[in-house]
Image (cartoon, rainbow, N blue to C red; front, side):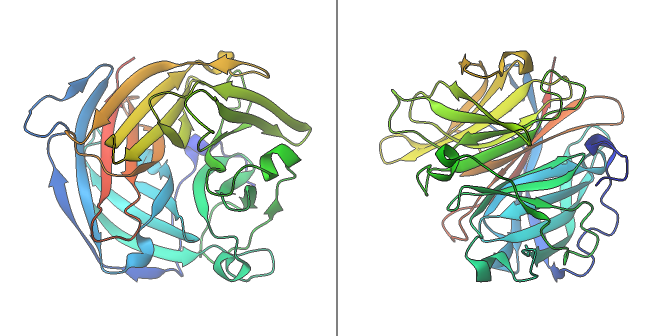
Length: 326
């Protein structure tokens, strides 16, 4: 449990204290659109970004993210079953200036064995609620429950959520990919919302799930232009953000952000959402897989989007920040 603190007030003191330290350096990304000084993209203002270069490839593959301490710290999960934490040097407005104090540690099952040893480590999304941390595992279509805070990084899984067969039977490589915990004072009253990565075609909607102990309800999200879901997060007002990614020889690379009214997410709903941002190879993007939201001390809403480099020398780990104008 969170000792009575809501997620927004949670801090990251001594996060992963027993984890392995990793030397990192960063390269600044000053503009989002290559060759342009534009900072305004609809309701989003690009604050700045970093390319992260690490001495250990185990911290590559970042796939889920939460922002902590007003954006000054982060906790991420990799697609090969590791926690990653770090400190963000930033301006008062949230512009990232550097990353330091990076540590990683393996996720562990209830028996203490690592998820890699248990073959349950294809971890793709991370969210924090009042009852702890929740992590999706795509190949198993499972949601793991971990305690909060992760003081040492050796904490064991509390258990797995009981999920219905239609979630368990999602295709292994396009299963549970996005996960977010709704605000308790919003229309969804703290429920977990999960979205499957893909569907059979653009003519088939993305499957969405409203998850709570009493049962799971279903909704769908319109899919289009060959985009797949990669992560999700809730805004403080209860609206839902979905991060999407596209990659093929036909399209090259693309990223999209859509916003959905929290009150529209209900059993049986078919959602379209409002487009916040669409970017392609003309922008500073890569395989964008992780999304987090936090507020500054001044009350501004900041979105952090991070890429999964697949631990490949051909890809980059990008850490981008935008301010959302209401």
